[in-house]
Image (tube, rainbow, N blue to C red):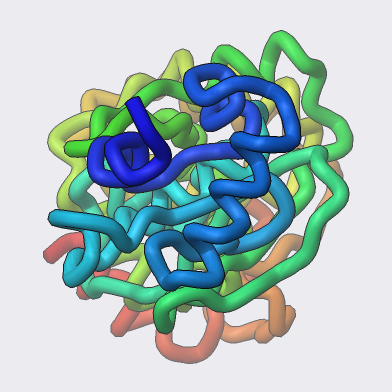
Length: 259
């Protein structure tokens, strides 16, 4: 297979993957460089390429596959995870991923790629157990599980589209595995996250099959507080059971949660 043939079969690929099929010598790399100059491929960043040959000439590349190619440990997070799980209330052209690779945010084909670091407190085993693989037409990407996505988005609404987007998106969940939520919260070791997530789970406990024992365990993990639902630390409605302040638009929050 020549370079043209490879580009017509691979939408998103890494330099290592290219060399694995085309050879590791300078000749293959020089041919790829020439293909980039001829607009048959784009060099997205060091080591990551997108084909523009054949059927890929007019097609928009899958942005999640682009993000996944950046690093072997790349995980789609926050609103991107909501989208991959089919939960997002609104679409976005921002791709959010976590990786330990030294890199930075970038823009490609009108998609904004936003880098985050994995949670510092999370042990490697906990990080692996709280992710899953999602199939895409051109491959697979690693994404946070539904339960971790719930925790991450509620704990960081500012990164996930805001309170309305998060709560309306999560309201589409048919159920929640509270044991997986608790396992992730234990690894995360954030009492603020516990208060925020506990409050939400209590609102949807019946619909999501969350037991009172699960909620009681979360309450036992809290510190003195007070906690705030959003990063602005807006002190509106006080929820004593979670030592948590809701913002002043608490009525809107409840409507979004129960849609």
